Length: 93
Image (spheres, one colour):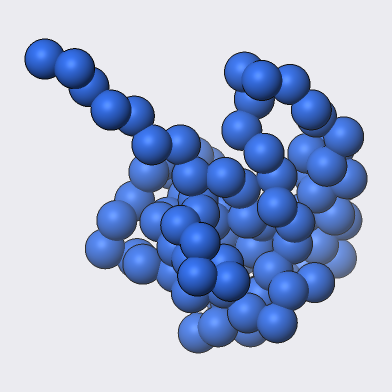
């Protein structure tokens, strides 16, 4: 795991029933940080799901798939997070 990941909870990229993806930084690099909705409690089931997603994400290597940086720890909650490449889109209007 990383030592810690800084999360900007004011900038949300997406949300689902299980997680929220925020803007963040890892080692000074912009990243997309996936946090998990645990309502303050990380059950064994949630931890297993996070580990499974981490393993699966680490195996994807393709030019059309964002890079997975690895697992980290939310510096404010201590909960595990998944850290991905942050996609920057430049619109040419």
